[in-house]
Image 1 (cartoon, rainbow, N blue to C red):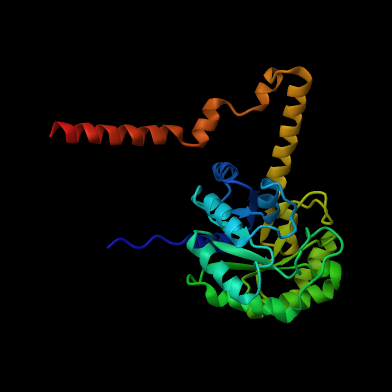
Image 2 (cartoon, helix red, strand yellow):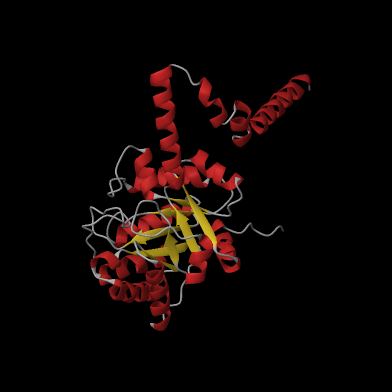
Amino acid sequence: MQPLPISKARRFRELLDRQTLVLPGAFNALTAMQIERAGFPALYVSGAGLSAARGLPDIGLLSLTEVLSDAATIANAVTIPAIVDVDTGFGPPLVVIKAVKEFEQAGLAGIQIEDQELPKKCGHLPGKRLVSTSDMVNKICAASDARRDHDFFIIARTDARAVEGLDAAVRRARAYIDAGADAIFPEALESADEFRTFARQLIKAGGKAPLVANMTEFGKTPYLSVSEFEELGYRLVLFPVTALRIATKAIDQLLAELRNRGSQRDLLEQMQTRQQLYDLLRYAEYEQRDRHFHSTDDDHADS
């Protein structure tokens, strides 16, 4: 008997055991395929990215069904593990249980869940409100209990730094680890010193878990490199909306060119060629399969 293939969740944990992971954000399947082709070993399905791709702000408007559909399409377009941002978990613990089971079944390697109240806000905007520590602990316990694959990865994000202060963020993180979180994501820290302090204080408090840094643009966090985050004690570095921002800016420039000049000719060098896109989409493989099935039909007709 051949051994069963390892799950993407197991692969994600093995990768994390060996290296600091850089997770670019994918907002659709095509972007995910580009991330994989660029050599990244894992990716992040950003809630902000999925919302923007559907023409909505990142305030928790997407349903479980919508996020599940988009995340499953992304996860199944690539062979690398994908972690999905599920915002506040779509509801109370019973809904979190349902979400975990469905995302696991859909092929995701793990989820990220946060401790904001609905309607949630982008982590780098003012006016956030938090659920109680006990409410978030209950959600994490529910998520941990619901996973059938014990490798399914649970990231607990806390937005407490902006609402209750850094010390409270550490206390919450410690409680979330005890509840079953596999990694901790302190959102919207404002300096390298804060990242270092959070990591050290959490260890001092007995909290041992990989830490996640969110290197988003135009927010509270300074632009630190992956190696700098690694030195500060962080093992996962997210670039959640970077690709989306680059893509939408490029589309704005294209549309301005079309409106003003009536042609895309001067932008051809900035485009993927037809062949490059076909290569990304594995067009030749699909044609080869189609030829195989047609030849099989011909063989059956001759028999």
